[in-house]
Structure formats: structure tokens, C-alpha cells
Length: 385
Image (cartoon, rainbow, N blue to C red):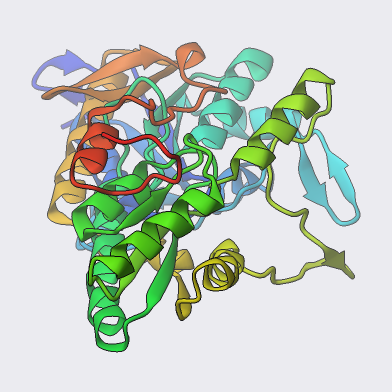
């Protein structure tokens, strides 16, 4: 092999950069491996950018050869590191600065023909920004345990997190049964309830609360009381962290109509000396309220970041390898400014403009919602199957 010649065919891309941004997620290393190996196969030079977009701004990089991605398929997290920094809103000391120009200049200095960004919704927006404002060629892969990236059937990381959350609910069943308790389990998902819905169904939760279906607390309490009357002496409530009550949903709708920017029901983060203070988990408040309404003993478990950790599942390893190698193929053909999406059995490019800024929510009539109702699961409203 010489330069970027493979089997007599010259790849249209000579050098790429790879970064991982946003929250960590099972499968990131597998996806890096897939992209890098495919790119190296096509004769490209590969540069790893450390700690997301901040690493690009600060020009912190590491060359990637085959040896660097050997043995990382099964490892959780990302060996490149990650951050939630945005190139156009980056905190530098006490200031927040637009460093788009610096990021672009560093990419040019590295002679990158394309910047490959692995991340969720925020990463898709930041990548598109670098393309539209800075003229950089970009290519993205959909990563998030929330499974809320649009234009793709699934995002990598979701299957692993689904398995973790389901196993947690399975384990909670045994202690709930032993002590005849209500256990409220908080699962990740700020605006989309795919993870809570999937894990709740797979784990046999008795109540599932997701952001897309605002709940009536009395409907939940009535369901729990009815279970007790029918001799079922325990209940599991799976709640997405972004789930909101009907009253909260109405207030937010009113605020949006009035032009207020705040769009989340969660209490604001309180800062002291620049440090975020730990907030009470929503599940804790929910457990207290249900205990008061039902008279049943309640306990709470918040899974938190455990859902984002650990080794990726076989399904995610396969998905990351497919997405990564397809990215390498597209790069060899000079196809940029797209996200590699899963559509049925294929991995296909979709325009990044069709992805950035949008969120894939659970439709109220989705087959999973219908299935949950048909097995008697309460979704927080009074609607029956």
C-alpha cells in the first residue's frame, strides 16, 4: 500500500480526524475502531482528537495507527476522552467564547479533509455548525443511550443501556416482592422515553412514566392501590428522568406560548463557587408522593451513570463496526456532511441538516406503547388499552 492507494483505486480522502463528544457511552471505542480500521484500509491518515471539541480548540491530538485500536472493541467509554464543550460556546476561565475560528484553523493545520464526530444530538449540531460557519467537511455517527437521534432506526449505546436498565428492574423485583414494597426506579431520558419504555416493558414494570405522556399522579396511585386490592403486594415504577406531570406539561406549554425560553420541568441547577450541587432525584420525590397517596411503603433507586458504563453488548459491537466501516467507505468516496444512519439492514448517509436540532420522541401510539397497555401497564394516564 502506498499513500492512500488501495488495490489501484485512490481514496478521495487523505486525512481524517476523529473525536467523541457528549456523554460517554458503551460502544464508542468500538465505533472509533470501525472508522479507523476502515480508513486505514483505504490508505487514509487518521488523527485522534482528545476530549471532544475542546481538544480540537486546544490542538490536543494523537495519531491513530492499527495498533492503537487493537483490543478496544470490548472496552467501554472512549480512549480519546469526551466533553460537552461547544466550539462556539466554550468556557475559557471565567468567560464563554466563540472559538469556532480556532477549531477550524486547527483542523486546517492538521490537514484534515474531514472531521468525524461521534455523538448524540448536541454533537450533530456542533458538527453542522463547523461545516456551515467554518467550511469544514464533517461526518457523524449517532451515539446515545436515549435513542433519540432522528433519521436512524437506532443509535449505538442504546442496546447496552437497555440491557443494564432491564437487569436492574429484574433485580428490584426480588426485593420488592420480599418486602411488599413499591420501588420507583429512575432511568435516563430527559426528553425522550425510549430507554425507560423499553426497559420497563422488558423488565415487567407495573408503571412506566415517560416525558411524551404526561402523568396524573392520582392515576398512578389508583393503579398501585388496585394492584394491592387484587393481592399483588409489590409494584415497580419505571420513570424516565424527564417525565412530567400533566400540570407541569400545561405550565410549560403556556410558558412556550408566552415566548419564555425555559423548556424543561426539571428544577434549575444550583451553583456554588462554580460547582454543581447534587440535586434530589425525581424518583425520590415520586416515591414520597406515592407513599402518601397509597399508604404503601416505597423505596427509590436511581440508576444514573451506571447505564452509560461498562462493556458494550454484542449488538452494539456489531452496530458500531457496521456504522464505522460504512463511514470509512463513504470517506473513501469523498461523501461528507452526512450522518451514517441505520435503516433496516443497511447503514446509509443522511444529510446532516435533516438531523441537527431535532429529537426522536416516542409517538403516543407507538407499538411499544400499545403493547405496554395491553399487558396492563399503567403509563400514568387514565387511558386503557
